[in-house]
Each structure stands twice: as C-alpha cells, then as structure tokens.
Image 1 (cartoon, rainbow, N blue to C red):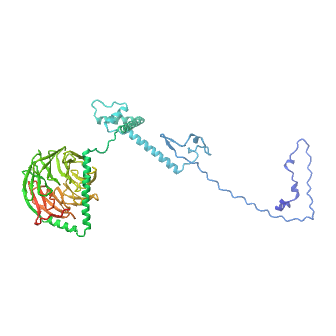
Image 2: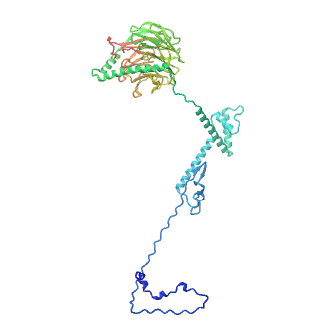
Length: 574
C-alpha cells in the first residue's frame, strides 16, 4: 500500500498486467505433451469503484556526462651519474616495475618528456661532455718541467732520453707520441698515465707535509737583547709620560700660547744667515753632527777622517783617524761627549772627544751608510748596504739586533725621541717603523717612487719626515698611518731631513741642488732657503737650542747658519 500511495499511476494499471507469466513458468517441459493455451479473460471491474484519471509521468533527466580525467604522465627522475655511468633509476627494482601503460618509468616509449626534464638532461649531458673534454685535455697537456717529461715518457714505456737529445727536443718527442696515441684511439692509456702522475704527486706532497718541521717564524734573541728591550721600555715610558705631561700643560694652561712660540721660532729661522764657512777637509764632506751641549761639531769626509770643531768659531779641536775607507756618517751621543763614525770599510767606531778609540763595531757584510744613537745613549744603530740595520751595545760592543725588512740597501735610520720606536728607510723607496720593545715592524710607509736617503722623527711624537731621490719630502702622521703632506722641496734629490730638536717647530732639508731649506712645522710652507754652497749638500744638523744649523757639502766646506739677532737666550726646554 505504501508503494501504491507513492506512485498512484502504477495502482491504476489493469490487473492483467499482473497476470504476466514469470520467466520460470515459460520454460517448456520436453517430457510432457504441448497443451493448447487457454484465452485470457480480462477481469470485470465493478462500476462501484471510481476510476482516477492518469497522471502524467515525471520526466527523467539523464545525468550529465563527466569530463574525462587528463592522463597524468608518470614522474620522470633525472638520470644520475655514478662512477662515470648514467643511470635512470635508484635501484634495480625500479626498472622492473612497469607503469600502467606497460613501459618502465625510465623509458620514453609510453610518454613524452616534459620540457624541464629535457633541459635538465641536456645540461647534464653537456656537463659530462665538458668534464670529459677537460680530462682529455689534461691527459694531452705536455708538461713543461723536464723531470715531468721524463716521468711521463717512463710511464708510457718510452726511453726517457735519447743520445744528444736536449730538453725541448725531448718535450717535442713526448708531444708527438701523445698525439699519435690520441689519433690511434688510445686516449684511455694517456688518461691512466695522467691519473697515476697525479696520484704520485699527491702522495709526494703528503709525505713532504709529514716530514715538514714547523720552525718558529721569529729568530730567538739573546739574553742581552731581552735586557735591552726591557731597558728601552722603561726608558720610553718615562720619556713619553714627560712629553704627554708637557702637552697637557700647554693645552690647559691659558698662559701658554703655542702659536706665539711657533711664530717666534719661525721668525728666528727666517732671519738665519751664513755665520761661518770653513774648509773641512781635502776631500768632499759626507756628514756632520752637533754635540749635546752645542759647543762642538763633528764632521767626516770621503778621506776616512773625522774631525771635531769648536762652535761657533769653527776651529779644529781634534782629528779622528782609523777608518781604512771613506767615512759615510758621524753622530754625537745625546748624553755624553762621545761620537760614532760609520765607514765603507764595514765598521763603525766609537770615539771620545780627545781622539781616542773606545769601541769598534764589526759585523756588517757591506759598507755602512748612516749611524745614530738611541736617545738613552746606551745603544748605537747602524745601516748598511747589506740590507740590514743593526743595534749595538755601547758598553760591551755586542751586536744586540740584526734586523732585516727591506728588499734593497738600507740607508737612513732615526730613533723616536721617546726611545720606543726606530724608523729605517732604504733604496727600495720604503720606510718602516719598528717597535724596539717587541722587535715588530708596526708600520710600512709607501708613497715615494725613488730611493729614500733621509728620515727624521718630530719631537711632537707623531710626525715623521722622509726625503729621497724623487725630490720630495713627505710628512707622515703616525696616528693615521698615512702621508699628511707632500713637499716638492728641491730640484734634485734630498740627502738629509731634520726636525728642530726641541718642539719640531721647523724642518730643514738638504739637497744635491746645492741648497738647504727651512719649512714651517705648522703647515710645512717654505720659510728660508740657505744657499751658499757650490756643490751638493750632503748632510745637515741642528743644534740642541735650535739656533744653529750646520751644513756640509761636496765643495769641502762647513757652513754654519745662525739667526741675525743677537739674542742669546735659548728656547725654553722643559
């Protein structure tokens, strides 16, 4: 009844439709005879039952066909390179597994390779070709070393040398042999030989590293040098403290007028004139130096003789003879009336003012250039054309330090006024600053284009002047580690540079253009030109009070320059 209520159209069908014979009743029994079928009489529907009109059937909407799914090609793994062979799968089991299309995942028979995969494969093939080309080129490269040529010939089974065969002929023979093997398709043999050579060289390098003994990067110094470094450190600390104390007082004291003092010193330098000229020797003079009290002047000449003169009359006091070659420089001790001379006979000598020889310093392998005392007066520095400068003990004559660091001959040497630093310059156009307390090169000053001959520290503690064959004088700021000023000082090479020894108020340079010039210590502008010599000016020095300047020249004369004023008071020394 529920079915009839849900579909009334089915309930109104004639009942004859219900008399349809099922399929199982239509089956014929072959064992019984066929009987005639009786006519079907439709049932009589009583008129008392109302007949409902038929209802139109509900149209059945056919389902919309779905779009076919796109066929997704199987994932392609880029081929990898293992042991020089191409492989398209990670394992053998991957090759046995078939895709739904009946092909292996690594094959291209059942699908098209995507553009990205094709590009990856092309790049890998190109890389493999380049690698093989490089390997082949390395195998065909002919070594240039004769020992390598012999080794390869031996590995190829050829005689390493023929009678009368020279190195180039042997290399040409190896080249022809390798070209022949390559043309015959025996590249594998060449590559194998190349790999054996690389393996042998690698093994030899490893053996060499194992046998290499690690040496210290420094040269161990003596006990005397250690004591000297300690003494220099103590001396420099006290001197630096005094210098800084003086600088702070000038900065904080309102009565101190540094500009006025500088102007006064520059006025004195500007008024300098020739005070005395004296013939110093029969040969050209090469060096000069004032004593610490300013009462004596020492000179040396190419005759090998050094002389001591009284100042300011410039009268000869003593003659120092002992060098067998020309004397190249002379220097007075800053604390004693002792002086040292340097000579081309590879020795330096220490003298007293009465002409007696106190000490002889031997050790350099070539002629000496310059000599200078440490501010403490206990040590002597010498430079030489053997590319070294050395530090000596004045009392014992022991060589404390042999210092290298220049690629060519060392010419100039200067000590910082505190005693902590030393500066050297040489024919390699380089100036180096050394820390005497540690022995390290703390600064390399590059800027000159020709050999350097003169170098000097300023008393202010941070300026350094250098001069050389490029006719310029450079002022270096040690705080900034760079060149502060470049002074186009002379028309010929600069032989010597010196700062005024008290405060560095001015700088004096001498040159082979037969002049000496005074420059301001404030802005390094020219103050005065001292021209009276008739030949190259080889050296100069400034007295301790800054009132006198001495110059010596190849014209064999000593010239003494002083300010024209008659003031005798010296600049205040702290």
